Length: 467
Ligand SMILES: Cc1cc2nc3c(=O)[nH]c(=O)nc-3n(C[C@H](O)[C@H](O)[C@H](O)COP(=O)(O)OP(=O)(O)OC[C@H]3O[C@@H](n4cnc5c(N)ncnc54)[C@H](O)[C@@H]3O)c2cc1C
Image 1: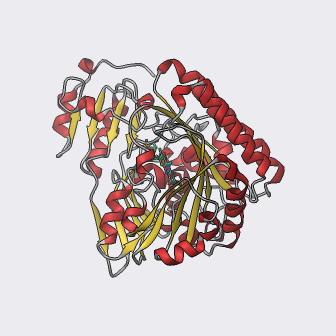
Image 2: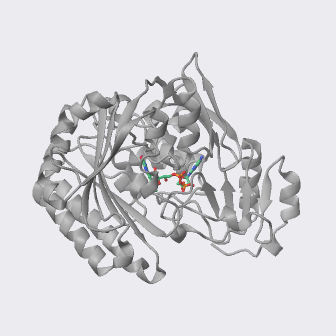
Image 3: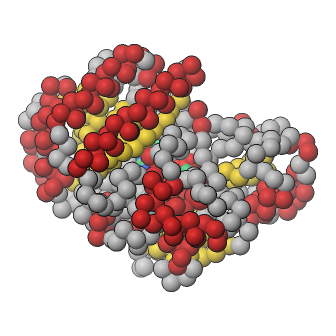
């Protein structure tokens, strides 16, 4: 795509057409701040950033970009590490000023504007004693997380975030503003639940809410690596037996201040401390070296990982999956690979590997072809989340991340049933998987709808489609 000098663009015409939204250019106050993303390595210098305040202005910005041949990027929470919400020399539709949430207590629905982060949703819903399936780090965007699927602590009870999406407002490439649900424009609704970032700009999401009682319980237990086998054994059993009231993530990391390699467990229990401690008793008996668990309100749960997921530094991510029981030998190899990597690249010691033991029972209650998302099955996400500071380490860190994903996928293929694709598209921060890899059985229909709704591939920053 040709790069555009802002001076050559009729910005005053754009500004005149916008009704309440701002168009920022490199000389505007607020422009530099608008470029920040969760990973510094995902930041690019746009020619124009439209800080949208309405679906109508999103539509105006989209048409302006096309008229002037500008690449389009859409910014929700800014967490993708592939740079899919940034553009070098193009136009960003920045939704971060659209963060209003409305809760309807009688229908138990939560309507969130396209630029909300999960904290906005959790806080607003909690005022009515409600919750929905949101991200486990509450500063991630509702937009990107939902449009790719969405796993969270409540997935064991209620499935994916998209399983609880009841309606969305979408601005299409041709500027039309469409309401979409199971009843209205249902083929578009099918497409946006998994492949959403390739279809339009979603300016509002309406989710089903559920009554959520407080207190709940959660937090971190860290173990010496000697406890690995027993921790994995515990997690393998838990995921088979939980009825959705619990969730567990097993991590491999080297937390400050010592940066010794540790086995981390991040735990959730939908009940009070007494019940939670009894439930996780076998883990406590292993003698954690750090215990940061406590009773809390549900609205706090999705902030418990924030301290290890801060903004800044350079980052990349790659996902794969594993079946349970995860063999102890594979877990051991992961610890060895991790230790070797941070020895060789000490700049990357904030890297973390996360294995998500969330029950798939409810996720699998929905048919694989019910929506474009195609990763339902009895396998569990693993995420390689690599973090470093020096650009000289970019290639090395990205290669390690990609290779680790491939290594686990090779193992997965030995044990996986013929079900979902085995990779969560939202974790492909290195963009190494094809649209066929991510949409599997649903790929042909996704492609057909892509050709219908976005024939010029204006939304080209997600999966690569051959339109
Ligand atoms: C710290 C961290 C924690 C995470 N935790 C979870 C988790 O618990 N569960 C889970 O499922 N995933 C999780 N993820 C993965 C997450 O789902 C993806 O990174 C997702 O892309 C983030 O969305 P965003 O809006 O913040 O990012 P962005 O970079 O803003 O957007 C990602 C993509 O979605 C598009 N997009 C965003 N909003 C819209 C919109 N309104 N309309 C159209 N397109 C839009 C963007 O254009 C871009 O292509 C996590 C990621 C990180 C970095």
